[in-house]
Length: 400
Ligand SMILES: Cc1ncc(COP(=O)(O)O)c(C=O)c1O
Image 1: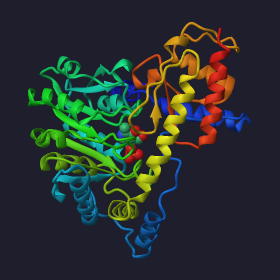
Image 2 (image 1 turned 180 degrees about the vertical axis):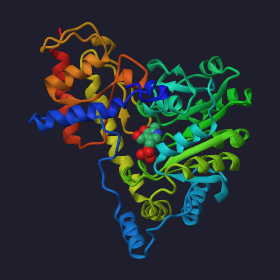
Image 3 (image 1 turned 30 degrees about the horizontal axis):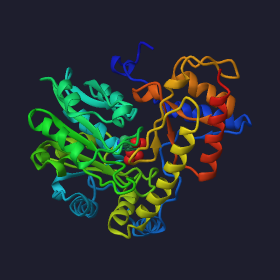
Image 4 (image 1 turned 30 degrees about the vertical axis):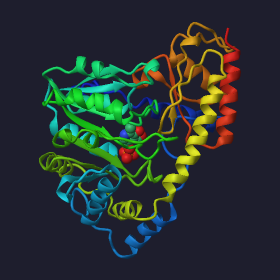
């Protein structure tokens, strides 16, 4: 449509939402569908958080607030960064937005000029490249190979940096691979960044609390204090406290950048929902037992899914350190034909045939920039996961 902007023409609609819509259509048509596409915890928001929201409504906390967050929430976020990440921020270094997504987007809009490059390790969260494009920048992809646990190396990062590089978007644990960088792995990357003072880091720590076994989470400004002045440490309550619908995300960083992000927000959405902000104060300051409980459940499901997928002929599934996703390779299935007569030419054909023929909805790897693979979100019941994996196995066994 000629009326639409050139920028918009460069942006794709979200493929994860497309899969969810297709699965919904099939369900409405009476098919037995198991959706493994959605990236949100299947648990309910903890009761103490809901009660804080109800109390906020009763107390009349229903008006505009400061654009980038109420003082009580900024204080709670500072305490969180200090307690969990050893990072010292003052309230003037904190911004709060309507979800982590808005904070990341506003930060890109506030900083990118045409021609500016943003390094994005692949496989990546679907929104990063399109957000960079919408903000006028150029995404530069660096592939984290499966053999390397889907992580990039210091040499990979160094090779991607140019004089035009503005940001590295770093996401650990990762959506879609679940890969998380240890302190040592991350230090190797921050050492590279120390040699390139014009490159800033946007660290998306959304899945911080979902790490398994004895893995310890690390974030760039903590691992390399020398990067503190050029790091935006982004986080939110969506995944940590099962609050995806409440829309609260936040970041800590240098005052001037935080002010710039607030400026973008002041001319677009203004403050995030006042009631949700009060709920987020309770999430961060209140009892933290939900986090440990959800971690136990997700770790059990990860183990179940990894074992079941590795029993499928042609599928190889690495064991991720965190988040609630697995990212198996289907290199062993390319070129085969399904019982329904579909040739598996790529991961999109695989995901589409799997959905049509077995009712299991997954997201194809091309959407995340690394093929041939697919993503499963295991944020659903053990029973649904067991059944879905059995159907995937039967599908793979039926390929010729
Ligand atoms: C890596 C990553 N970052 C950010 C977000 C956005 O979270 P929010 O719901 O707080 O906007 C998501 C949500 O799927 C995500 O996977």
